[in-house]
Image 1 (tube, rainbow, N blue to C red):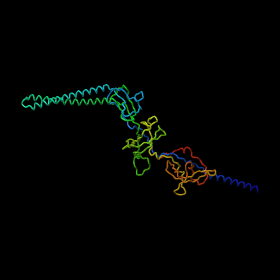
Image 2 (cartoon, helix red, strand yellow; image 1 turned 120 degrees about the horizontal axis):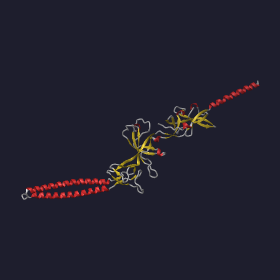
Image 3 (tube, rainbow, N blue to C red; image 1 turned 90 degrees about the vertical axis):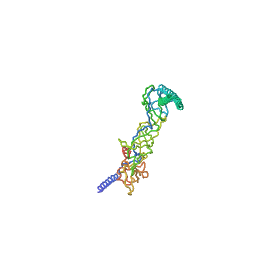
Length: 408
C-alpha cells in the first residue's frame, strides 16, 4: 500500500513537473527585432544633365591665303594646341601678308593719284568758271562763239571733276577693303578664358575663305542643361512635395567622375515652351567651374552630371515596419515593444513613439520617441506581447536590414 502511494505520488509529481515546463516555455515568445539606427532616405528627384560651355565660337579667315604662323604660348617651344587657354585679343593665327600688303599699297597709291586728279579738276573748273563770268560781264566785245566755247569748257571741267570724285570714292572703298583684308589676315581670340576645343590648321597650309580653323569655348563658368516635367515648374494650389524648380534656386550637382564631391549651381533659365519630343522644359543651371590645384577645370564640356531637386529634404531617419507600431493606452497614443534585458533575461517593454513620414511601407520614428538609436524594437509577433513578457530575441536578417528606402 505504501509502495502504491509512493508510485502514484511519483507519477503525479512527474506529471506536474512535465506540465510545468511546457507552460513556462510557451510564455517565452520568439520575436524578431530591429536595432534602430539612422538610415539615409532619398526624397529628392534626380535628373541627368549635360555640361555646356558658357560661350563658344568658331574662327575662320574671311579671305583665302597661306598660313604663315600660329600662336606660341610663352615659354613653350610649340604652336598652340587643343586644351590651351588664351586671353582675349590673342592673335592665334596669321596668313602670309605679302599679297595683302601689296594690295594695300596699291590701293593707297590709287587713292593718292585720284586725289591729285580731283584737285586738278577743281582748279580747271575754277578757271573755266572765271573765264565764263568775265565773258558774260563784257557785253559786245566778245563774240557769241567765244562765249559758247567758254561755257562748254566749264561744263567739261565740271564733268571731269565729278568723274574724278566718283573714281576717288570708289578707290577709297577699295582701300578700306584692302585695309580690312590686311587686318583680317589675323585670327584674334574674341573672349577671355578661351580654351581651344578644336584645331584644324597648320603652318604653311592653304586655307579657303570661311574654312573653320579653330573652335574656342569658355568653361571657366559652365551651363548645365536638363529637362524637367511641367509638374515641377507649376504652382499648384495644394502642394504634395517640395520638388519645384524656379529661377534663382540653388540645386545640388554631382558627377560620377568626381565621386564624393558635390557642387551648387543656380537656375538661370527655364524654357518658355516644352520640347516637342520629350514634353519636358529645358532648364539651365550656371556654375562657376571649380579647378584642380594646377588650374585645370574640373568640369568639361559634354560631361554627364546628376542634378538633385529637393535634396535639402534628403536626411538620415530611423525607420520601422508599419506592422511594428500599435495603438497605445489611448486613441492618440502609438507604441512599440522594445526588447530589453532585465535580471539576465530578455523582456518586452511598451514604448511610446512619435511618427513622421511613410517611406516604402516603413514609418519614420521621430527623435522625441521613447526609443532611439540602439533600441531593439520588436518587428514581428508583437500582437502576442504584453508589457514585461519574456521574449527570445531573433535579430533581423541582414538582407532586409541592408535595404535602404528610397521615397518617391
